[in-house]
Length: 386
Image (tube, rainbow, N blue to C red; front, side, top):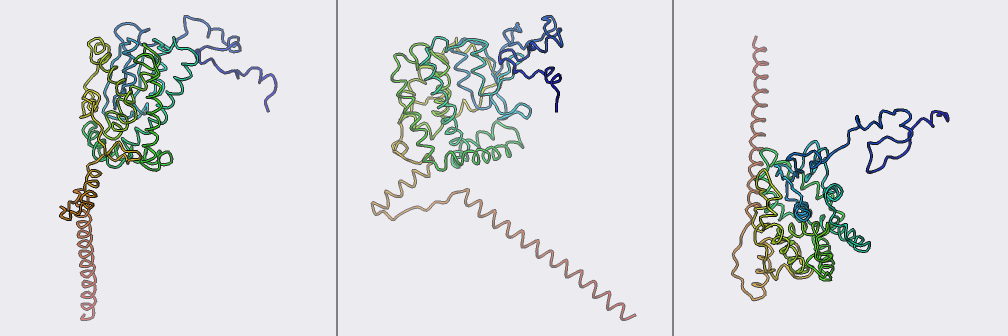
C-alpha cells in the first residue's frame, strides 16, 4: 500500500480538454522546464502551419456532409478519393488530416467548428438543443438505415454496392473486403433491424420529423437564412439517400421538403464556380458519378409500388415481376413465361460439377488402392513359388 508522501507526489488530476499537453500545477514544481514556451510544441492545423497547406479529406464513399460544411464556411479543402473503405493503420474512412491532427469521421465537423469557423455560433440555446437532437437522429438512426440498405440488403448489395466496389478497389482485395464488410454489418445491424419493414419504418419516421422541422423554418435552412452544421449533416445523408435506389422513394414520399432542401444547396453551393474552387481532389470519385448519384438528376417521380406503406425496401425488378405475376393470376392469364435466375442456375451447375469431381476423385482413389493390394498379392505368390 502506498504511503501518504508517495501519493502526494503523484499527479492524479485530469487534464483540460483544450490543453491536454500542458502540465499541471503539481508537475510544474517537478519539472519547471515544461512551462518554458520556447520548448513547448503545440499541435497546429494546416492554416497555422502556413503556406499552401490545406486540410485533406480522405474518403471512399463521398463525405457530402463535410464538403457541404466547408462550402458553407468558405474553408479550402483537398479531397483524396481512396481505393479502400478503411486504412489499416488509422481505421475507417472518411478521415481528416489537418496539419498535426488526424480526425476520425464522427469528429470532422466538430474539428472544423473548433479550429476554423463555427456556423452554430449565432444559434440560441433552444436552437442548439434542437440541432443536437436532429444531428443525433441523422448520425445514429438514419446512418444505420443507410448502412443496412447499402451493405446488408441482399439485392442492393449484390446488384449495386458490390459491383461498384469491385470497380474501385484493386484485385484481389476487391474480392474479399466487400464480403467481409457485408458480414460485419449484417451481424452488427441484426438486432437493430430484424427485417426490412423495421428499416422502412425507421426511415419513414425520421424523414417525417426532419421534413416537419424544415417546413417550420422561415428560410431555406433549418434555422432560417443561414446554414448551420445541422444543414450540412442532413444534406450529407439526404444526398446519399437520394442516390440509393431504395431510400430515394422513401424520401420522395415522406420528405418532399428535404428534396427541395438538397436541391437548393446543390445549386447554391456545389454548382457554382466559387464552391468548386474551394475543393480540389486527386481524382474523381467513382461513387459520385454512378447513375442516380448526387451529380446526376435525382428529381425522380416515386414509383407507386415503392411508396406504399410498410412496403418492403427491396427495389429490384423481381419485386415488380412478383406484382405483375399476381395481376396476371388475378386476371386468369395462365400463359406465363417461366424464367430462372442466372445466379441460381450457376449455383446448380457449380454443385453438379463439384459432385462429379468428387466422384472422379473417389474412383481414382479406389483404383489406386486395388493396385496396391494386387501388388501385395503378387509378391506373396512369388515368395511361395520360391
